[in-house]
Length: 109
Length: 111
Image 1 (tube, one colour):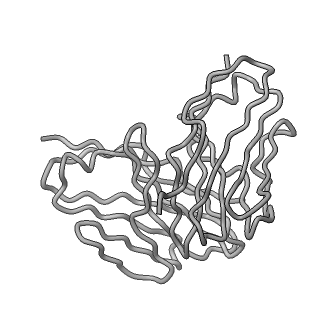
Image 2 (cartoon, each protein chain N blue to C red):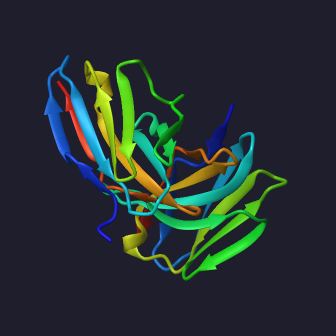
């Protein structure tokens, strides 16, 4: 089988840093992606890690440890517009892409 | 490019009726995915295609669901007959390298 675990909700303060964790269990793991979804909108791509280590894209960074089946999304200098749901997604060698249940990020002013 | 285009954006129908959802992927993308999103189950993968060929339909919940991709620029997801538990947002996404591009979704309500 396969599973992805991420916290259902996280709360942080505007201007702060927040980390959203994701652990996965799947056969044929190839890479880990992160997506953002605002209420009523479609998921949009944030980052992709196929190799261990940190990938940085502006205020957002994503980390992967293949040996630990673990990754995280790091959001810095939080802004109110970052309030959204964040999904980790596993890409398998058979090109299947499976999503976690999502983490709802609440940002306090 | 206009992105992934889905229609209809909203559909309200009665139990037992046939529902057809449509998707136009981004030109040049060779993979197309159909997902269903509900609060309880999150984003569920229903089926995906590679070069118009269905690769894995193990996520299709029942025989009432079927999907086709007759050519590289068009796919349909059909539910016949529809039931209230099919109410959800259905997303189509096409893929370039590691990134999925989602359409705006079709919100289906079955009464």
